[in-house]
Image 1 (cartoon, rainbow, N blue to C red):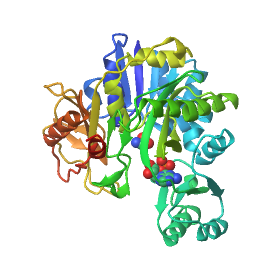
Image 2 (tube, rainbow, N blue to C red):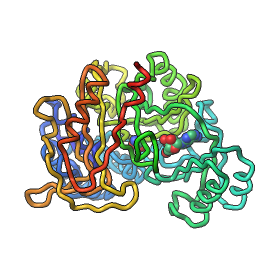
Image 3 (cartoon, rainbow, N blue to C red):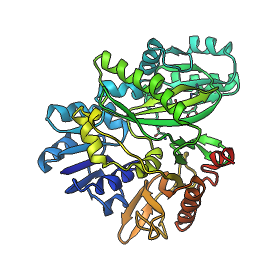
Image 4 (spheres, helix red, strand yellow):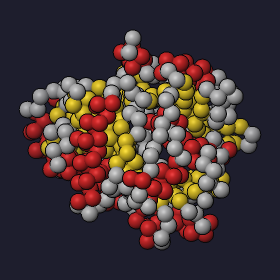
Length: 426
Ligand code: AMP
Ligand code: GLY
């Protein structure tokens, strides 16, 4: 089988690494890929949002299955376009992907189906938003309606900050179209977890729960990023909570999307706040999370091609999906300055192969590119290092040990990935 992966980050490197293990894959391509993906797949220089070129490539190469990483391609309708050309693709249509690309659509659907989530109101003009905010209890959450690469959410602890956020989005158009409408949302206090699920629109199979670390600094300080690290399984999500999340969140939203004629095929990502034992939805994503994928896929025992094919062919009910009884911890190494502006083109030293020689860690490239013999930085998140072990504490040690061998100017990482889970379990 010939498989094409769309994307260029750590998530896509993890996907490519996993797909390469399948005896069913005869050729693996990635558009556009990165310097690490190159060692497992043939990288083709097509941008993730250039849908016509991606489609032309898939047709001319005779690609049997295309796997979509980033939300941007989905929101542009890559699945719809591929379907028109009778090409098999793992990922939801544009209409179904609105569960991520429109926070107002997602909120309406959740409210109509009694899926637990923070109460919210939407605004498209700044004055009514400011009036409403002036009387809202603090903290209050202001969210841009559209895709803003994880930067469109402000948790305001003062009315001044809330006003500033709403004005930035609605008046100064800081996020362009994505911020033309905003949601003002009640603040939820609790512990955040991610549960992703495979679904073919009928059957929903949740993966092991993961926890992301969104803030840039230790102890959850500093601005939000795309994710500084993750671990799985998250011990907070007990088997009974996992079952509740499936029953009260994942199944109802998948059913709701099918009922309105937008069946969801692919990976549905639920970002949840667990408050007094109840899972509240913070956001849905229409794809694999990053870095969560870098800890969840290494734990998947079943051939990923079999899973994806079952989703695409709408027969997920016929497959038993199995997991390794292991833990995984991923530490992300970032460029100095990220998530603000940062320098690129800096040489990276001490990079191991994807699978380290002791088999204890995996090195997934995110923002890297080849320059002659050297591999240099090419993004904010540069490399993700995943440690694996039967126990979370050892997985964490292994991740940090392997991460320590990799260096580049200004390298930053959090030193407390998975710490809270370990302290809680003592
Ligand atoms: P989102 O992209 O909607 O998941 O929001 C990004 C981050 O903002 C989340 O991971 C949470 O840490 C925080 N957040 C979003 N909505 C809320 C809320 N209603 N209450 C508390 N924190 C929130
Ligand atoms: N780690 C958060 C996301 O992928 O959106």
